[in-house]
Length: 387
Image (tube, rainbow, N blue to C red; front, top):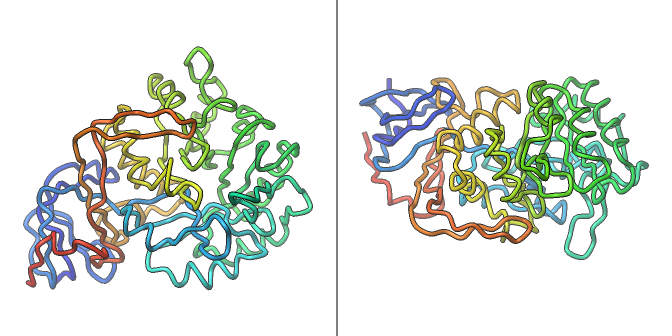
């Protein structure tokens, strides 16, 4: 057969197939059409020997309602630079402004965008340098009836329901917004993603309410509401939630990831299920920056490269219940990310200001999106051969 594109000779790391080795990957009509050695017959061939080829990176926690919310960033610009092929927006829009997000951003974007719909009417509407209003603090904004209707009618893009609870997001409302969101998620048969910040409610209260397949984001946040005890052990409620099937997502962001918590969790063998950046306008210039920087922090703290990639590809796809994402199996979506791991001394910072000097940095060198080479700069780095 004739393929549209072959990536030739790269180190292919595809955790969905438990593969790590030199292979070719081919793409045709927007899907993976070949996976093996010495693939031939393509309109375009790019030599990626010396580079890592992974399934297209999925950032499970982003805010990309650019122009519609004060925290939104441009999805295409972010994806090109950070190697992300699928941005999952987590609650920027609610049922009251979903139509604009879909029409003006999602449907216009080249990169893939999926979304968790916020149970609050207008989503995260007051997140800015000067105005900071927790949308879950006013229960009059909870809109479960319209949320069910909008989620049900937009299953092509909406993958779940989002709610934010905690002192900053919900004031003294405690778990009430979470209760409402769970009712919506049950009604539409979708998973829930729950944000947590300072108490109330407590970390233990929140994870005790989550169902198998639900996502706790900001899972490795600093004290207060950290998952580790003062003695450096993992809280028993956290272990019970993982055993039950709750998914633990990083969601780095502006205030939700600390090296201290991560050291404790990794020392106990508790790796995150999903690594995500929670990139938005207030953290894209630090401390989160982007997906590959967030991945790099975990690589430098002891997670294996394969596990880091798994947490940004196949694991995220399973959380989305979309197994065609995050894989290079033949027939999967035609997305891939070309990576390098640079060695040196790199300064990383967490949300409380602690610095870590790491010896490695994951960098994005190019992207295949929907079966085509997609990168704004340095495309000549990879020799192009017309078959």
